Image 1 (spheres, rainbow, N blue to C red):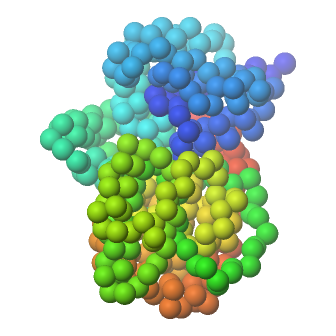
Image 2 (image 1 turned 90 degrees about the vertical axis):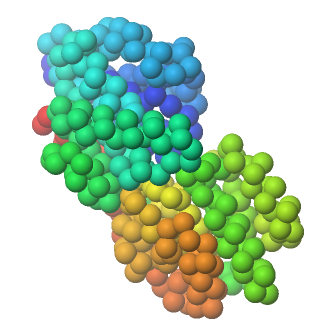
Length: 365
């Protein structure tokens, strides 16, 4: 009888989002005859009931912060490690990864894989003094802890490039399992054209930049329309900007949506200050949307083939975004061709490819 490989996944914040979706899709597809799987997180998980249907246990540590959870984390990992089988711990995202390496000498022997889903350049972007200090310390810890991992995976070559400069260690790239299949192409409707964003409403997603671009264009007598899908801690500030600049006719807040599939808006804007390998952009392409993306650190360029599959604008520059919006509207046939080009390369983000790549690593590490 072949012994199962024992997989332990750790992600401190296991709420709805790109990282969570990637872990759930992968774990749900792995054979339960070949793997035993447990997932550890801090606080409540949005995915627990979904994963229980696939016989995957989610262990929620009842603490408010990762640092308060260290003793529980060590105890739980040691309890999950099994004798006479291959034990692999897969940690996700830099602050969790740093903690796992720092406590590895307090846990039973096992292979440690670190998965990086955001560019290291994120730690050079800060919003206040506290954020600055926290990120500088974290970047220092990444530099001196990551080399002790057994293996490192990034979910885009853009992330790999930045991280390699910092740690100079071999890094593998596995694209996220954003789609299960490439959908049939939909016809682009040129009537009632609208832009849309689809993300958490937080500082790093930079939705305010899109509002500034819409306002800038309006002052030049261009009336473009934007639907905002999502919620988050910046929602009140964004709504205040819309009110103060008399943009209520141009911009609508549509609330949280689970997926892009049913949206009729035609042009997707990703204005993020940084991205890993943006699932929303990939899903938008799979639903035949035109893509307008910030040229930020991470995987945006790769998804749209360095601009051959969509439009790129200067990162955090609302005038550049506004110019790109006009460019798209004034030349829709060319943009539709670009979207078709990007769609031809969507196979890179299929779940099956992601699963096979991870299985190869699990069996050869």
